[in-house]
Length: 138
Image (cartoon, rainbow, N blue to C red; front, side, top):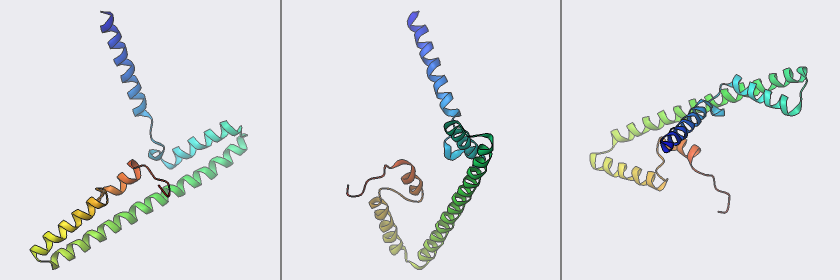
């Protein structure tokens, strides 16, 4: 009976911990205004800002967060445009090649993908998020 109660208590703690983690948003997932507010609050607390300073800092931080959001959206749009352009070029090349050449072409692309560590169309995001960065000379 004690083991059952202890097990239930452990499971409850684990589930509460997981739900609390799920509610926390990654800083990158917050909107520009949410990030600005969070940063302003942190600065106000750490630096003991006056109300006037807090208003001024909030304004500057919001400008920065908004600009960063715009830059991120612009980069995403450019990446998508480049991806679409590459796909169009692939279609044009494929239309020119014979069936035997297409097989060789696909094998060549697959070998290149393997050499690149399996990064394909989705690899850009995986590289940025999942792989550690290495120092120069290592």
